[in-house]
Image (tube, rainbow, N blue to C red; front, side, top):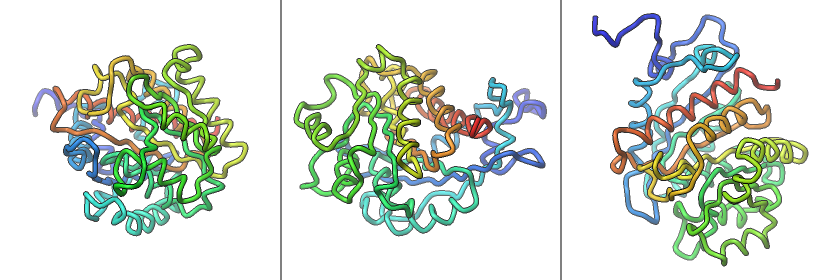
Length: 304
């Protein structure tokens, strides 16, 4: 037996393939959405496979009182089949699979793919948009114009155009020197609540996120969380083309995803904007795997 194989140390990769306790407390669905229509040409379509592979190097013990994610039954639905460079082609198949899976799980995680995943993810909830709350953990507004079609730079603009109320959107982690005043004005006019990195520094990332979850829970029946991994400091996310120096730390983001998992209103979370061809020593794939595990750990404390 290889030295790294230890029956007393279950791997997160085993959890992905269906290992869990006999009577799991919660259930989580996982869907790969390898979309790849980005402003910065790359290979975000390779991210679902890279993150799944990185799970071999991660364990399942949470370090929290909740214990172990083996208490969460995970079903991996594999990767969605669509034209990866055509965001609209994902709409129908994702809506069909997402709504079916939501009937069988406490929450669903979408493993992107670029940030174009968020638009069909929100639309695929099957819930009137006025009842949907959207939290973006992102360095960018994603409010670029639609004149060049759908891509990873405009999913929030597209959702506004589709009827998602701006006051139902809260953006956390918007970075300085990575956006424009024009798009800041679009967000303001639409009524989007924006928390820049300056706000996060003053108030704390987790308190800001916890307050956002509470605020949206008062007027929305379901919350969708868009976790763009480029909200991290670039030192921790070399595979994210949009990451910049000065972002948040992996520990802060893990704590934030744990808080999202605990919220009974969060039904879907996506993890996007990882290009494995740009990664260094699998650093970004590993941190994305930890974020997925942190969300699952939060499920074990859901409603408490």
